[in-house]
Length: 264
Image 1 (cartoon, helix red, strand yellow):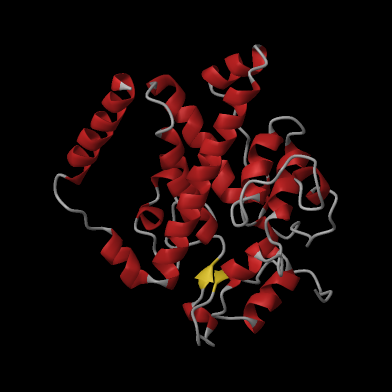
Image 2 (image 1 turned 45 degrees about the vertical axis):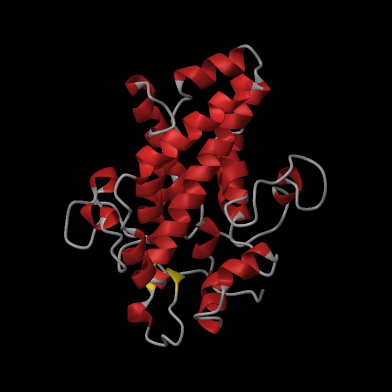
């Protein structure tokens, strides 16, 4: 990537551009500042995030969705708020690399191209920056965010084996993201949910790994749905429907399958 001058505070950063859209007014903003005024984001109570408003920040919308998906990871009401907080910060930091001037110029050159496919192929890396920031903020807990952020396009990385491993990517020189808003970079990392604190105390690596995988799944789904709403709004509308009674039939089929195991 070419070197470039730092972003100015007045520069608008974008997350996605529609095919053939040369007018940046139609592009999706990367981040909307927090606040209660017009054109600002009300955080986890934001109506624009809920509606997946095309002119609302991508990071805001992904954080909103991820927080709601993460809250469903537990049926324990006392843990759901903590899980929602984990999902929110994960969504806010997943695309920090897109604040870099180099990435913004890349988006302008490739407007409408399949950047998601190029990310998987290693052509452009905007995922490492967020994981580096998570570790800089929280050297221990940050790992639980770093794995999911690094893998939100290409899949969860191995910890230490190979050039694409999480540890190796943390040493990469990637785009500076210091131009990102201070409120975004300083968003607090919550404490662990009670069940995961217990797993750490008893050194239950399987439980902790499962927690990371579930967070990863929440982020991937949220990112996909938010991106789809901007890039393919007609697909989003079609996705909203569902055949009546399908969940009940799925539950019956699953129960029947489980009973077969007992008969073997």
